[in-house]
Amino acid sequence: MLRFKTLQTAAFLLGLLPLTSQQTVGAPDIEQARNLVSEWVEVEKLISEEASSWEAEKEIVADMIALLKQERESLQERIELAKTASSEADKKRAGLVEEREEYIAAMDFLGERIGAVEERIIALHAKFPPPLQEEVSVSFNRIPKSGEKSRLSVSQRLQTIVVVLSQADKFNGGVQLISKIQELESGPAEVDILYFGLGGAFFQDKTGRYAGVGYPSSDGWEWKETPDAAEQIVDLFAVYQGTKQAEFVRLPVTIK
Image 1: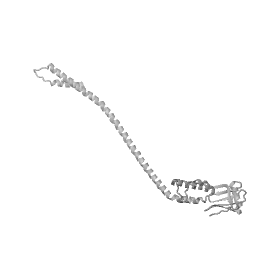
Image 2: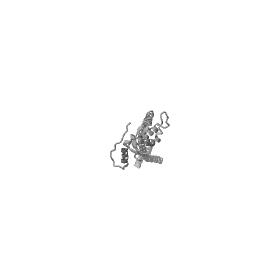
Image 3: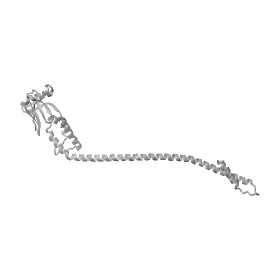
Image 4: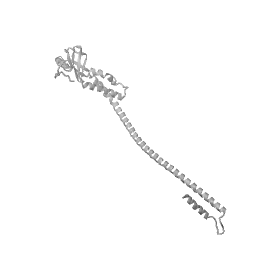
C-alpha cells in the first residue's frame, strides 16, 4: 500500500513539471523529479517508523496506566483499612480512658470509706476464735489501727480485707478440732476444742472429766465449764471422732 501511494505521489509530482507542446522533458527535470520522489519516500518511511514506534510506546504507556490504576486501587484499600483500624483504635482508646476514669472514681469512693470497713474488721477480729486469729495474723497486722496512716494503697488495703474475710468465711463454714492448753475455771489443762464456725465451741480435757462450752464476746472468747453437760459433750467428741455411733446429742448453747 505504501509503495502504491508513493508511485501515485511520484506520478503527481511528475505531472506538476512545466511542460508545453513545444517542450520535452529534459534530464534536469527528470533528476529533480527523482529527488522529490526520493525525499517523499524518506518522509513516508520516517512517518511509518514513527507510527510503529508510537504503537509500541502506546502499549507501554497503556500497561503503565493499568499498573498505576492497580496501585491506586491498592492504596485506596490500604487507606480504607487504615481508617478502619484508626477508628477501632480510637474506640478502644476511648474505652480504656473511660475504664480508667471509672477505676479512679471507684478508688476515690473506696478511699473515703475503707477506713470504716477496717474499723469493723478490727472489732470483728476480737470475736474470732483463737485459731482463726492466728491464721489471719499476717494479713490482720497490715490493717492500720484507728488514727494510723497506712502506707498501703487503697487496692492493697482492700485486698487485705478480702483475705481476712475469706479466711473467716472458710472457718465459719466448717467444724474445726483443735488441741491446746486452755485456761479453765479449775486451772490450765490440755483440752480438745471443737469449733462450730464462729458461733461457738465445746471442749473436754483428755480424761473427759472436765468439759464445757466456749463463745465469743466483746473481750474475746470466754470458756465455761458445764459439769451437768459433761457426759453429752464427751458423747459429741466420740461421735465426731467416729468412736461412737452417730446419734442426736443435747448440748448446752449460749447465745449472746
